[in-house]
Structures are given as structure tokens and as C-alpha cells.
Image (cartoon, rainbow, N blue to C red; front, side):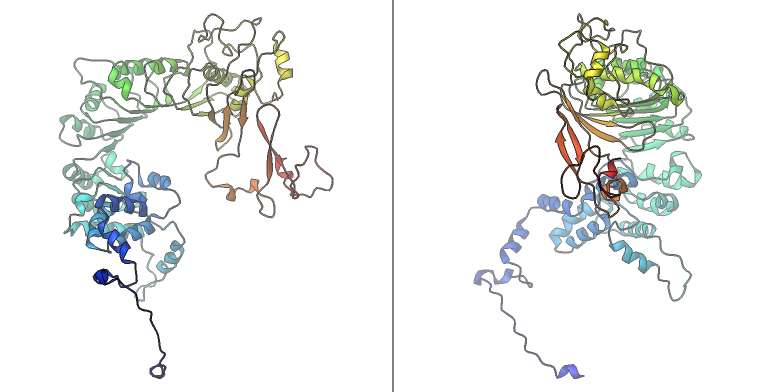
Length: 593
């Protein structure tokens, strides 16, 4: 009890409070003016501030828990959720507005994406005194149980605020009873991560499916796979899920007329994804008096549907309301040939994102009068053409397809295109090669190669064998073969273009920005930064030396309108291409070799 004898005089400085505001003085010395301003903040402004405290509460996408976690970035959702819960404990007014965000969009994560996870993982390893062999607790499963209990015992209307519920894959596959109890008390639910067995009419998911059909009539996204044909047919009655906006169909085997009736009975449908369905053909798009009309969709995604051709899509885009609504079209392994893309673009004036992924075995049909690609609205274009033959004939088969794309770009048919994805590693360089100004003398292929300073073994030279290089004098937009005696017509890009290229054996996309020539008679330029990586430069050994230092370079002009990154030594002076004597192993120059 010696501490009783230790008496130290502690002096506290009094807080000066104006006489008229003594009742508003906070206990911890917060300025009274701030307290008054916080008390007068309106509710919508508070909710806006709380949305920055926990950003994931604004997630209203129909993506799964795994996909939505990638879009958030490097933030820790659980720590943000804890901070928002602390805000709800400040006052009654803050509690009302903070709980609107807490229970609007719920995402259950298994771990903390911060340093706190290391501390919590060590605590979970400690066994109980009664059972030292117990397994560590499944945190995601425990959080789902607590959420189900909180919403079940709800007295403040929290369950009515839940509209989005996202859970990890293993949690929704192993905790079906807890998920069914949660769905039972959330009638305003719009999206929920469901186990895959529910999409295939697995008997183990019957209870969860009945609860979703009876208690959640406002669901906006659903998926049907092989074995769920009868459940899909129930949508024609209009008794369940009439507000569906996104629908995914995969490996279904059913009558095409029934499928058309189901799709026509969903008036709010805006996105449709078809995967691995040979029964989906052009007849489903043809107008019919006996079947309901197609709803005007915004997104159409087809994967492995070989019986769908460009004629069927043109028939679907016959109506003007559909032409104005369709903005995204993705074609992967379908019957739509790249030479028929111009037919689809001609009847899709609002299309902004087009993707085609095909494996071809023959060259581009140059004997046909194929029109170039023309679209005044297209902004993102995935043109991924690969070969199904051996590697020896890869270049000869694929080159004609990219020549067709190159001619469409240089003719100005895609003026608003911003991003282009191709499976040709030399595509960006070839765009610069084809924008060379015409020589003052008669044109010949050999002279063009000699005067082209960027010509090498990998870039595609300017050749007269390509029928898509320049338009004919009579028709500027046609793709008729050019006469070998005609001069080279000056072509160019209408604006800058971001080109993402990837070779046949590459895993990541390489980024290059192609700039059009600024003045007539000048050459365009292409800047090629470092390869795009999702892990960052700090995890790439190729960009560092043995001591862990990032390589250094100086960007200088190359004399032709472009730029070139030249490595520098420790002194900061650019090194020559022939090297220098006495240069040590592991220097910045060796990393370019």
C-alpha cells in the first residue's frame, strides 16, 4: 500500500467556455463550435460522409463476393465496417443514418486485408483449456451466424434495409441453413450469393430455393444451369422474380420456343449471358406473331454458341428501341465470323463495347467485297483472333485478320475508339509503319522498307500483297485491292489509341499508346511503357538489380516523333549501345540485354 503515500500535485488548466454556451461544452475539450456544426448536419450529408468511411456499403453491383472484393482495391473492409459501427454509437441521430449504410450492402469477408489479421490469426490458434485439439474457428461462418441471429431478433427494422448480401464461396456452400434463415427475414433483397446447387436444382438446396422464391420476390439476378430447365420454365407464369434484370443460362437443353417465351416474359431484363448452348441459334431472334417480342437488352454475352451467326444478331437489331439500348456485345467461339462484324456495327449505333474471341483455320476472305469496320460510338474493342493450326502457319493465317483491322483503323472508321485489345504483339508498331508519309519518288515496296527506320524482323513491312492497306482512288471507304503502280495513299488514326497487345505465348497484356501525326507529312509516334502487371513493380525481379534497386532510364527523342528509354549508370549519364569498359555485372545496362 505504498502508493497511498505518493501524493503528487496535479494541476489541470481549466477550459474556458463562453457564458452562453456552458451547457454545450463537451467533456473532452472539443471546441463548442464544432459540436454545434455536427449537430446541425442534415441526414443526407451524414450518410455521404459515412459512405467514405466504409466504401463497400455503396456496392450495388450484381457481382459475387470474390469479384466485388477485387474492385474495392487495397482497403480493409472489416476495419472500415468497424469504424462505421463506432460512428453509429456516437448519438441517436448518427445511429439512424449509419445503420442505413451498415445493412444496405453486406459483404462477409473471411480475413482482414491489413496487418491486424496477423494478430488475430495468432489469437485463433490458442486452444481452449477444455479442448486443446479444437480446430480454429471459421470466421466467415461465425459472422454469418451472428448476422442471421441479429436480423432474426431484429427490433429496429434492420432486416428491411438489406438489399445486397455477399458471402465467400465456401461459406455459401457449407452454411446453407444459416443462409436460408437470413434470406427468410430479408424481403427486400435484390442480390444474394447462392450456392451452385441451387442453379442446378440440387435437392440439398430445396429449402433455400423455396425461401428465396417465397420471401424475396425482388431478386434482380439469377442463373440457370443444366438440370434446371423446369425451374426456368416457371418464369413464364409471372409468379416469381418478375423484376429480373440479369439472367445467365448455361448448358440448358430445352425447346427453343419455351426459351423464347421465358425471355419475352421478363420485361425488365437488360443483360443476358448464354454459355455452352447449341440450341441457341438464329431462329430465336426472328420476329414471330405467336411468341412475345424480345426485351431491349443492354448487354449480350455469348460463349460457345456455334449456331449463332451475324444474320441472327442483325435480325435482333431490327427494332429501333433495341438498336438504341444495346451497348455491350461479347462473342466468344460463336458462328459470327470476323468478316461479318461490319454487318452488326451497321445496325448497332449505340454499341460502345465489342468483344470477339475466335480461333480461325483459314485466312481472311479477301476475295469478297468486305466493308471496313465503321462505328461512331465504339469505345472499347477486343479483337482476339488466334489460330487453331500449328505454330508454323500461325503468322500466315492470322496476319490477314489484323490487316483488315488495321485498314479499318487507318481509314477513320472508328473515330471514338479509345482502347484496343489484340493478340498480335507487333500490332502497335505496324500502325506507325503504315502512317509513313509518301516518298517524293515512285513508290516501291523495297524502297519503303529501306527508308523505314523502324523496320525489323518482327514488325510487319509495308507490302503490296496486303489488299487492305489503302482505299482505292474512286471509293475512299472501300477495301478493293490496290494497284501495284498506284502511289501510297496517306492514312492515319483520327485520335490517340491505347493498344493492349499480347502474343500467343504471353500471359500479360503489354500497353502502348499510339499517337497520330500532329502535322501533315509528319510521322506518328508510339510510346510503350513497362508491361502491365497486377502485382506492381516492387514484386518484379526483372525491374531490379541484385541490390534491389529499380532500374533507371532517361527518355529521349528518337528523331522520328517518338521516344526511347535509354538506361543510365550510377553517375546518371546515358550509356551507349555498345557498352563501356569496366562495367560491372548486375548494372542497369545488363537488365536490357
